[in-house]
Length: 358
Image (cartoon, rainbow, N blue to C red; front, side, top):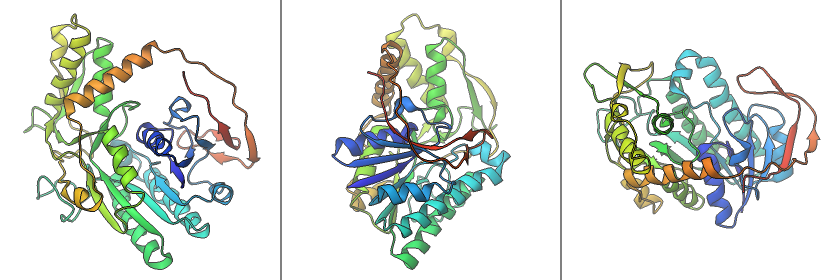
């Protein structure tokens, strides 16, 4: 089937694209490359450089006629949503509605929407938290994610547009960037590999840091594959159900890095501390039994295994030779669309036969 993946040049989205293509699907990617990278793009995907809020989205739907819309593109930073809730809503709500309107007009059958189990439940009284618990979002980012779920219910009722909602825990793995809900994995790993100290954000009564549920991106890809045909009209937590404090996460990463670099200074095993950031919650951990029943999905990768796989990817990235082949831009729309956040202009929407590093 033909699947349109927004944010398909980003960390999670690009891994999902690889999974879909590996399963034999035809994949189209929309990404404005604000945080996504061309080097993440699968060479077998059709790529459009575009902002999800732009009117050019209509032309992409008209040309591609996707059966499935997988929506990963988003403003992903909780602190950024607190400092600029208008921008957060503009991207995460207005951009999503633009996609939904075009999905309806062009007979897209189903939306796979990426929500946030790590944020929308807030400081949940049920812990670990199942889907039965009513979300209590405590940041603009979480509010827009939860609000988007209601819009999906409306579009299904009004237009027959099917959906499956995946409420991610804190996802980590290859291609991760330091922004977003599990960016701390990338930050810690990068600092240790570069011999730099790291900082622990914590609340006064939680000196070992916040509790999170860290789920490996390879397992998340499998959930997205299941969601193509399962779980219609429903929402599912995608996590591990295992609690990890930030200090304990750092210890796992430190030991993994030390295995490949025995000379890693002992001083780097210690973290300095600073106050939690605006919008942070103390703890988040998800119950995932519903995903097992409704999607036939469950987590498979232990945290220590996932960290080592991520380190192996980092090692390959450092040693591989990047080949840059000129892109042949097939320009079909010249109307300018504003790039996200930077105030720059993306002069056109382009479809690229992509080349990635060998």
